[in-house]
Image 1 (cartoon, rainbow, N blue to C red):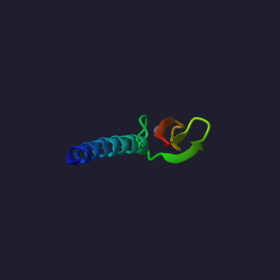
Image 2: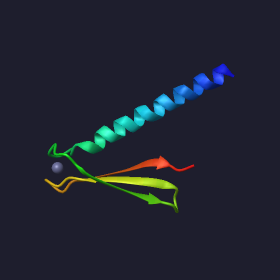
Image 3: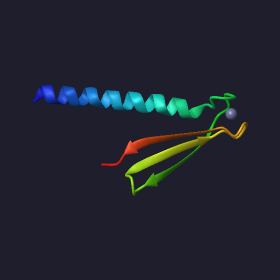
Amino acid sequence: MSKDSEYKIQMLEEFYGDAEVVKRGLEICDICGSKLVHGHMTDFDHLLVKESAHCPECGHNKRKYLHLIH
Ligand SMILES: [Zn+2]
C-alpha cells in the first residue's frame, strides 16, 4: 500500500516537472525573446487541451498539446 502511494507521488512529481518545463518553454519567444501571448482551446474530439503561444514582436508561433483529459 505505501509502495503504491510512493509510486504515485513520484509519477505526480514527474508530471508537474514536465508541465513546468512546458510552461517555461511557452513563456518566451525562441526567436526574439519577447513575452508570448497565450491562448488555449479544448479539443473534445481528441480529448486534448491545445495550448498555443504567439509572439507579438516577430509573429513566431509555438503550439503544444498539454493535457489528456481523462
Ligand atoms: Zn518573437
